[in-house]
Length: 199
Image (spheres, rainbow, N blue to C red):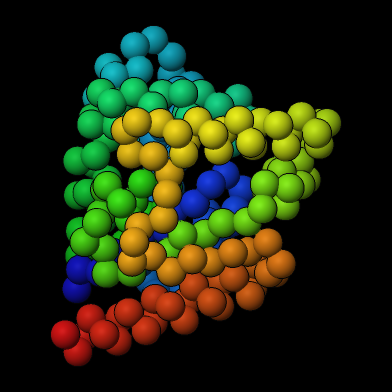
């Protein structure tokens, strides 16, 4: 069975946590596509060349979850040659047998517009900044500024800007617990699977 779940959204909205939980619940493979861009960003050198030569072990680096890696990812993700180099990898993963969950910023709009289920996970910038601050510490006002700067860059880039797909279900997690958000996502995907099987 091929069944693709596309989960998009801005930084610290909860899409990674939801994606991992959904993949585990349904027995699907999971790809955090942001790790691809984070890896390209931290590898340095020519970003397009780094993207073309990316290896699976590059996705296991310990420094990929840092704020610096996130900012580097946002910068290299705005380079069309980098995006093009990583598209095929993501599309192959998405259509693997057994089902797949991909989370990122352009999965439902660019990478997998044919995905059987699409979610756009979001939350207010203040809530997202607080969550990120709880993870990394530092000055919460600086973290909020960085979240807003990244939003502006991701939503304003010419190539594959961050936005919900027209047929995505919007999931605002601002006032939700993790369990509530996961349950809502699972319900949406279960309904889509039922429609897919009948179709």
